Image 1 (cartoon, one colour):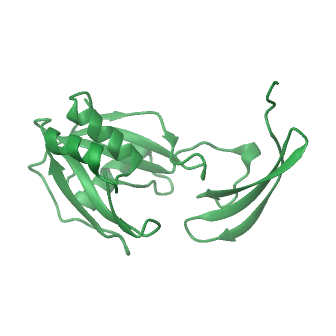
Image 2 (image 1 turned 135 degrees about the vertical axis):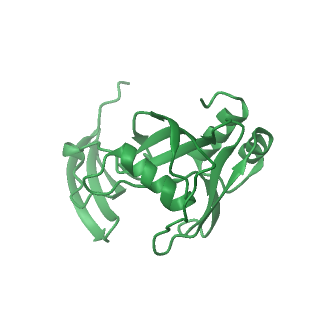
Image 3 (image 1 turned 135 degrees about the horizontal axis):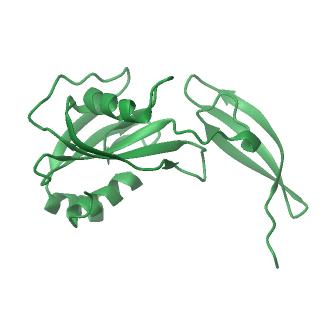
Length: 194
C-alpha cells in the first residue's frame, strides 16, 4: 500500500495567549478526516504557509579549557519540576539568532564573552506538538568574565558547570533532562561536542 501525503482541509484557532496559540487542523488522510491539535508561537499559524523561521535559540557551551560544560536547572511550569537543560530562549522581534544566543547566555548565566561560536541549522523543538524551530549554538566562552544574571519575570533558573564524568552521569541517569541537553551532555562527555 502506498501512503499518500495527508491533505490539509482547514485550521481553526482554539485559544491565543501572548506567547502561544492553540490550533486545530483538519486533514484528509486517505479519505478519512483527522483532527490534530497544534501549539504554535505564530499568531497566524497556517500549515500551508509555514515560514520555518527559528523563534528560539539553544546554547551548548564549554569553558575556555573545554573541560566543563554549562547546564541550567530551571523550574519548567508544564513539567511542574526543575529540569536540567542548557541556556536557551526566544529570539526577540528583529533580532538575529546569534545576537539572541549571546543575550540569552548573558541573561541566564552572566557570561557574555564567546571565544568560539558555531551556529547549526535550526531544528524542530517537539515536532509532534509544535512548529517551533530552534537554532542550536556550540560555544566556547570565557568563564572568567561575568555579569549579574538578568532573568525575566517568572523565570527560575540556576546554572552550573559539570565535568565530563558528571555530564555522562546526568545524561544516563537523570530523569528531568531535556532531550537536547541529554544529547549535548553525551557528546561533551565523549569529547566530541567541539
